[in-house]
Length: 474
Image: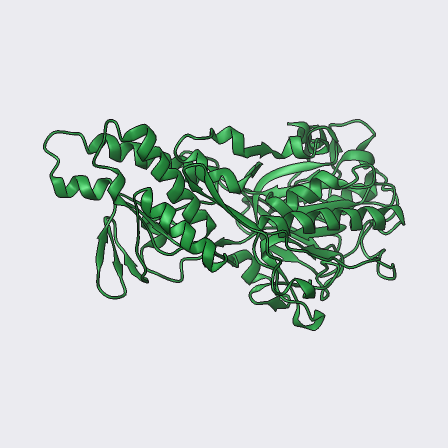
């Protein structure tokens, strides 16, 4: 990995509580002050056991490029990283996934219409500087907290002695607190580290809403990531194979081949359309008992009524049974509706919209309908040099604007605007921390809705080109 170039091993003598700092002998060349940023601190506890304290990227100095830290790798964050001027800024991205997902085509990968690699783009391709520049990084990690206090940046050069104290003595700095992503039983322990920033862009997105319904997280499959689509394809094909095993009862066959889609928004309807095409074209010749067991909960409430009626007719022709109701409980092999109706399933796909993540909820900053509150320039007004874009952000009530919908086109447009804004600020000398307080940011962000689209199978799709009813406020 390119960021290993910045790792410098430091050998030091472990200190007792009563002793003072001893010298540290670097194993690197005299260019320490130029590129040593990733540090590790050691101390001894009362029992004489060495503790590993938090490592991280230290504050930038005045002779270094300012650092933009981007939390998230979705539509908003990736568009910003694509357009950011890396001649002005170093870019650090923190995300639990190392790629961007083209979500509108994700449903097509569940049934093999598209391969998974067709809807995922590595971060290193979106912003090559992350792979080749010595001070730009991608970290596979989750952000656990943000310390907004003492937002400063380092001034001047450090000699060997001062640099030693710089490592061992914390310098006041606003930091992003992160923890590495690990999976599986036989894996390393999660590693905690901090990143100091000059500009922070929170683009961490939202997470699927479960409405507190018991059993959703344990038994349902969401459709937001590539691994979700992989799991849906695995379950679908496994159930198809199991349904042909001798001795399986008719009732069990019906359950295995009953695919329930909860949620009638574009994602749920597109998946239902793709699934019905898959069954009608690819599976119907061998499994003639399949097509009658796909159901959806509701139909495209965000579209025009005439388009909803058309979508209902087309999906019904494709073998999709439409059921209206509220899910009250989710069990391993069935869901229970509010009227007591039990609906058995072999595959349950949950697509009922998104809401704020626990990370966003944990931030002690003003909110707008649960999202991070921003002003007309996508800044978080209560803290310096912090911005928020995408599904995790919303205009504060004081701006007189309504919260924008959680759509890819909103996030993409915000990322493009903010990259242009940060480039302008950087060129005018405001890239470092606290250096853009009195700058004019120019025109505020303006969003114009370009319409909505959704595929419904059989080479048919819905296109609603109406402008949003509240677009005049954007």
